[in-house]
Length: 352
Image: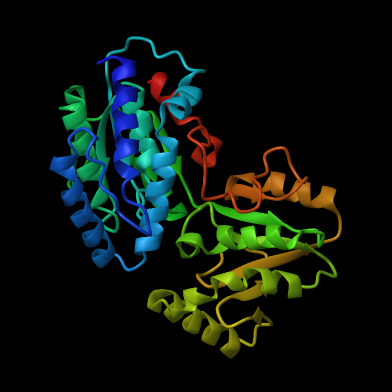
C-alpha cells in the first residue's frame, strides 16, 4: 500500500467524523461507506458516554471536531513533508493507550499506520468503543489496511516496538518489561500557564478552556499557573466564570466537594468561587476542580525553573514567555506535528 493510499484513507475518515457535531449530527450521503457506518458510530458514541461518565457528549464531540479538522489533505501533507517514507519491511508496533480523554491514543495510532507499520493496540478499559469502530471504517475505505490493525485485551505478544502511555508508576514497569524493544514510554506530565497581570479578559477566558476542557483530565490541561508576587485574582475569577455550569455535572461536583472538604479539614489556605478552588502549591499535578498556583519574583528565574522541570511539563501557556509557548486557549487544539513529550513519533517509527 502506497503512502498516498494511506493519506486518502485518513482524509476520508476525517470527512466521516465531520458529520458528528455537538449541536447537530448531519449525515453526508456522498461519503464512501457511510450507509454501513453512520448509524453504527452513533451507537458507539452512545455506548462511550454510558460507559464512562467523563466522556460527555460535549467532550466527545470536541474530540471528533478536532480530528475532523486535522485529517485533511493539506494538514497531513504539511505534517509528513519532512520525513522520508522509504520502502520498508513493516514492523508491528504495540500501542498501550491511556483512557483519560476520548481517543487520546489516536495520534499514535495514526502515526504508526501513516508510517507504513502494522499496529497492535491495547486500549484502556475507559476508552474502548470508538477506535475499533473507526479502524473498521479505515479497512473498508482502504482494504490495504486489512491485516495491519489488531486490537487485544490479552498480554502483548509478537511485536517489534512499543509506544506506552501511563503514570510514573506504570512507566517504571513499562521500562523494565520493554527494555529489549525500541520504545517510547510516556510518564505523567502537566501543563502550566504564566500570568503577568497584564492579560486581557479574552486571554483569561481562553485560559479557562485550557483548564476546564475534559474536566482537566488531560496532560495538555493547565493544572497550575504562575503569577507575580502581588497578583490580584479577581480578573481571573471573573474571566473563568463562563465555565460555572460544570459544577452541575455530578462527577465533577463530587470531586469538587471532596477536595474542598479535604482542604478545609486540613486548614489549607485557598480561594474558591463555587466551582473551582485555587491553592498555592509547589506541585504540578492538581486534583480535579483545583488549580495550583505559585508566585514568582523574576521571569528569568521562572524560565530557569521550568527548563529544569521540563520533563514534568507538557505545555506552557503564555504570551511572550518562551519560544515553545502555546497561546491562551489552544492547548486542546494540537496540530499533527505537536508531539506528546516533544518526542517525534514518526521519526521513531521510521527508524525501527
